[in-house]
Length: 85
Image 1 (cartoon, one colour):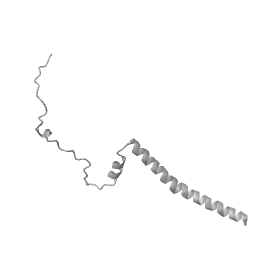
Image 2 (cartoon, one colour):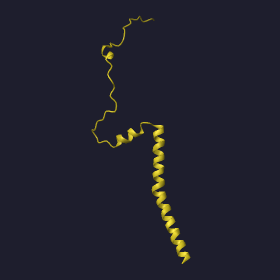
Image 3 (cartoon, rainbow, N blue to C red):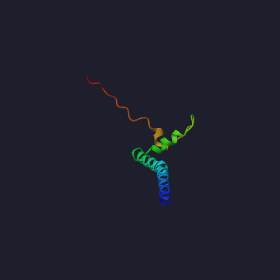
Image 4 (tube, one colour):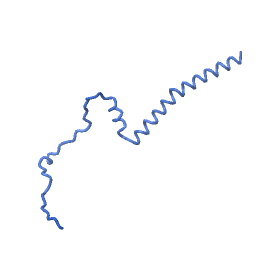
């Protein structure tokens, strides 16, 4: 009877270990890889979100503020030059 309890305990331990490695360890590894990718590439989350978009969807991530002075900017002062040979 003691031997059967030992085998049953060993079987339960084995099944728990398999479940642990299959689900928990893989979840931890995925999380670790995702965090490492975020440290290397800060835009990693944006790339992940773009994968889930449907074709034809448009999203604007950044809208620059308008400068009122830039409307009057003609590109600077023209300077005439001579070509030296």
